[in-house]
Length: 292
Image (cartoon, rainbow, N blue to C red; front, side, top):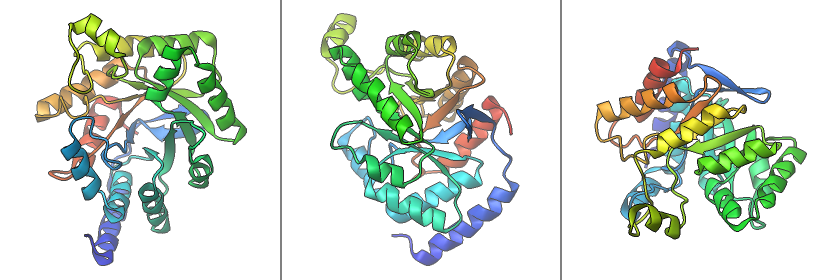
């Protein structure tokens, strides 16, 4: 476990780096400006979208101390915004980072269910709250999408920007065509919420786990360019499936920024256990997504 002394030393280094790091390009979400690269939190919360073992490793690696260090390091590389879901670890790490001077903006992802910790989420002072993509897509499959729209209104009533996440480009189009009140979207590059019946119809069999199809990013970005509101693209690395080589990561960032709108950004989860993925991704964002 990282000691308090080493954590404070890392924070001091991050503060120094922040003064010299070249700013990232930014975009507007409502009245807020966010860096065009936003840090994700699936690794922090143990959602590898791969194997149970990898998810366990992620959870064990990201202690409160390491998560705090991660937040500070993101800021040192010009990342101004962190998208995450609620957990006590996330809450404690954010509090610790803020105590050390962090100004990170937080976008909270939530299922919108009755048992959801809405008051705890608001207590973290997020700039936005987003309805979870899998839950959104399920509501559209069941014909109960009004539940999602009502949640957008609940978030607005709390005085916070509201977003809707989806993995399905057709859901994105339906929301936009219906004139929903959300301020922005989170749009997954891979449609991992297809029903088993849809998957069997497409590939003739049932996959072991989530299905990542190579043509999905093109399908989603086509829709992203058609909608007026800002979109935050996520899973641009296919949950690590295209990041086996430096060229694969570079190609994924290049494709993402070339195929979304100038008013859009990307969310990338980072697992810096082997190398500094934060700096690597920030450098690629400056290269392909513009500079501040």
